[in-house]
Amino acid sequence: MFTFEIDNEIELKLLERDDAKPLFALVDKDRAYLREWLPWVDKSTSEEGYHPIIDSWLKQFMDHDGFQAGI
Image (cartoon, rainbow, N blue to C red):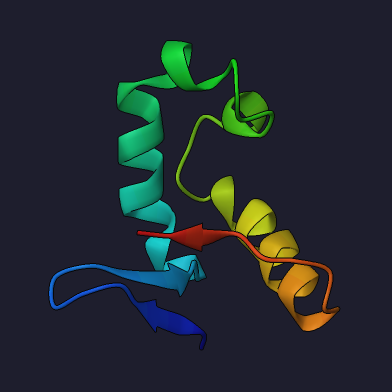
């Protein structure tokens, strides 16, 4: 998978299905704040619901149509 090292402590990486649980926890904590900028925030209310979203981001990368990355 794609990763890009920023420095010794920070890297960008493509999100995978294994990232659904921590992604959901982060989003759920600040859902009201994030929904203004991230249209996918309210599309799911469970970590399993993020699997289709993550799949679409991976497809975007494979189609050479941009990418979504986690820090």
